[in-house]
Image (cartoon, rainbow, N blue to C red; front, side):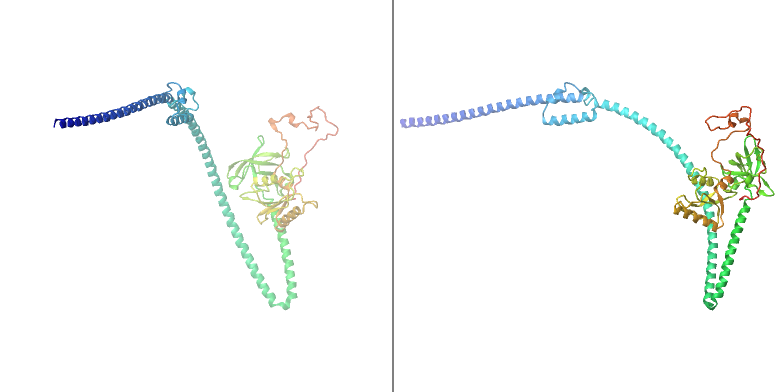
Length: 486
């Protein structure tokens, strides 16, 4: 019984030993397992601490770089040494900002804290420039305003002139419409007469020979009447030369100007020229013009002042009562002209058509028709055309178009009984002369102005003696024809 108890005790002891051994083994295994894990964790923590230290160093270096970029503290080299991806983005933006806003600054001032001051200085300079530009713009605007005011005044004046021209045009259009209505009625009456005659001819065919003879007599009689009317028209036009355009009312011989009896109400304009003539019971002596004058000032409705631009003879001065005449101007109306042929004023073989046209229009005339130097015919001669100015006729060597144009216009003028004037007659009647040397008389006269030109480049002088060829010159009495066109 005791042996069984010992055996049982041993078994228990053995079981306990085994269990303790197993527990110790398990405990030891667990301990070493935990120790190994703890060592690994310590190593990991050490590595993480090292990485954190490196990160702090990197952050500190980046902070130093940021401090330089913001305030310029430290060295710029640290900015170039950092290569982290996030910092590279910031550095690229920094370089871009510096290039944009601080490109003109020295390297030590290319930082964010310095940029606003420089930008403020730049903005102040730009504001000063803008203020100066605004001042200049204001001055220019004032000048523009003044120019616009002058242009507005010119425009208003032009509109007033245009209104006056429109009124004149309306009056001329009314006259034209009246003339056209009269002409249309005449044509209608003529057409009615022709229809009546045609009916009579168709009805009286058996009397053809008698009607033809009567018709021929009627045509001859009509042609004779036409020729008589043309002669009468020319005679009536010639009589108008006996009617002066005005008279000299006062003369200032010393200062060389006169007053004439036409003015604003007569439609007179400055620079109009007139010839001065005596008038007696035979009419105006065209061959003995005393001189010419040019209107310089319009004084009143029927009064103007003119300067004496030519005086034929000192012994025959211009006197109150002398008559004035211009073929281009008539009181209260504009005279119509036509131009044909080569209009050569100074005999140099070249056309002076523009000068002639300007002389006519400047003196109040109007050009109705022209046969130009190239043969082109512009405009048309009407019953209102007063004169046709005849220049040099084209010869057989001239271009056919030039000769045709000349003939066309002159034939039209003759068919309508338009008065013909040569170029010399026109210029003479206008009192116009070309550029010529003039001298003062009276107190302003100089001795050297009266010395002859010897043609050798020098001037003559008075020796006190005369040659045997010298003969005293006495004035001759002017021939008076009594007709302006002869």
